[in-house]
Length: 463
Length: 112
Image (cartoon, each protein chain N blue to C red):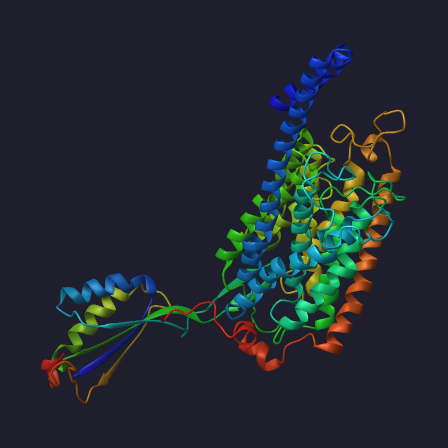
C-alpha cells in the first residue's frame, strides 16, 4: 500500500514535471522513461497478485472442492466424485481456449460475447483496458478461466453418486456454453445487460460471482437433483459421509482459496482487494458461528460438518457483496447465510423430498440468492467508488447509501440467473438423456462409481 | 485343547492383553468387528439427517490354550474386560480337534 502511494505521488509529480519539460528534449526523455517505469511497477504488483489469485481459485476446485465433496459421499464413490471436479480442470480449460473466453468477454453485446478472442487470438501480454488496464490480458483470461472451472464443479454435488461420467462430461460442456458463458458476459462482460460498471441497462452488483457462479450452479443443481431422482435407498437407508476428515480439509482449502476468488476480483493489488479480503473472511467466520449455533440449539450438538458447511455458506453469500460492503455488514450477511442455509438444508429439504446429495442448492443456490439481494442493501460507495457520473462525482450504490432501487435491480439479476439456470439445465439434461443417458444403472450405482465408471477403488488397505 | 473366542470393548483390548501376558499367554489373533447384543446403538446426525447406528465397533480375540488352562484364561480375560455395563461382550469356548505348527509339523499341545 505504501509503495502504491509513493507511486501515485510520483505520478502526480511527473505530471507537473512534464509541463516543465516541454521544450527540453533531454528532460522530456527522462520524464518519459520515469513514466514508463512507474507503469511497469504498478503492473508488476497487480500482475503478481492476480497470478497468485488465479492459482488460489484453481486450488478451490482441486483439491478444495474435490476433497469437500469426496469426503461427503460413500467410500465406493470417492474417486468418481473427485474426478467430477478434477476433469473439469481439463475440459473447461480447453473449451475456454477454443471459444469460452471469447464468448464471455469478447465484444460488447448485452447477452453474449463474440468470436474476437476465439482460439485466444488477440490475447497476449498487452492489457485489455475494458477489464483490467494494469495486467496482461492473458492474466485476466486465465483468472476468469478458474471461475469457469469451479462453477460446473459445484453442480456435481447435486448429482453425486448416480450420474454417468460420459453424461456429466457432455452436460458440463453444454452447460458452460449455454448457461455460464452467457451469464458471465451479461454480468461482467463489456456492455452486458446486468453489468453495472460496463454500460449494462440493468445495473446489478455482483463483485465475484453471486449470480454468475453460485445462483447458476446452485439452481442448476436443484434441477439436476429433481431430474435424476433420488439415489437408491435414499432416504430410508443410511447414506453417511465416508470421511469428514477429507471434507474438513477441503472446506478449509476453500476458505483460503476464496481470498483469491473475492479479493482477486478487484483485478488489482488495490485497497479494494484488501476490503474484499476482509469482508470475505468476516462473512465466513460469522456464517460458521451461525450454523453451529443453530444446530446446537435445534439439535443439541454442534457438529464439525455443520461448522464447515456454515463457513462455505457464508463465503457463498459474501461473494457478490465482497467488493461493496464494510466488515460489519459482511458479518451480518454471513450470519444470515449460516442460519438460512441451515434451515434450508435441515428443515426444508427433507419436507420437499428431493435428493440434493451434497446440498449444492441448499448452500450455493440459497446462499447465492441471499447474498445477491443483500448486496443491494449493504453496498456502499465508501467501499467502492467505481460508479461515477459524467462529472466524476461518486454515485451511491445500495440501500444504505439511500438508493433503494438497487435492491430491485438485484432482484431482477437474481430472477434472470434463476431463469437461465432452470431453462438451460432442463434442456441440456434432456439432450444428455436422449443421447448418452444421464443416470447409471441400478447395478452400477450399488457397486459404486469408482468401480463401475473408472475401474478402480479409492482405498485398498490390503496392498 | 480349547479355543477361546471373546468379543470385547475395543478400549479394553490393552488391559486384556496385559492380563493374558501376565499369566503367560502370548499367542492370540485380534480382529476389528462390528456387532451388537443387548446394547443399544447410538444416533448420528449429518446436516439434519438422523441415523441410528446399531452395529457398534468391537474387538474379537481368538486364542487356543491347553484344556487345563482354559478356566484360568477365561477368568483373567473376563476380569480384565469387565466394566459392569451392558456392552462388555461375550466369551465362547470351543473344543479344538488338532493343532499343527506349519513350520515343522509339530502337533497337539506342543504346537501351541
